Image 1: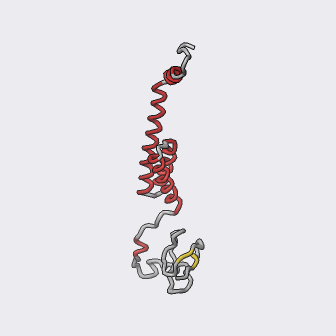
Image 2: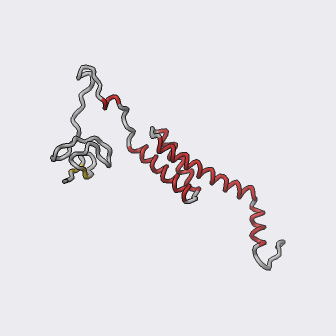
Image 3: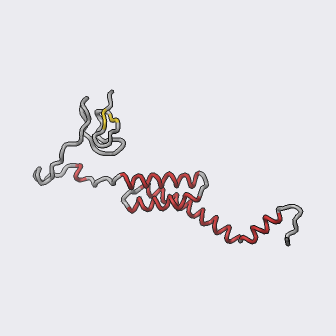
Length: 151
């Protein structure tokens, strides 16, 4: 089956597709001709007050928050799976920002995983600070053979 370009972003689409996979914009599927933009919408008042299903559905959030949410989830997974807590605060921040801009589930999952990574980072810092730099230095000096502890 031949593919046709999306009128909004130029991505290759099948003629029967109604939504572009790249830009998520609605296109009019045709039976073999080029895909075109959707026809102009007629308001409910011009149709006599009846609402379409599309008008009842809330508008989808733009790609920005969705992209932030997916980055948050990816960094959150990397934080937990790779034991790299330095990515945790970034994942947490991106997830909370995406939630504030209207994204829901993916942003929450990324924020939770980022929070786990941030907690691991805080625990590691508190462990090092609580253990004390002096005791760390003492342990390091004890491991050097032939060197007295007082020097």
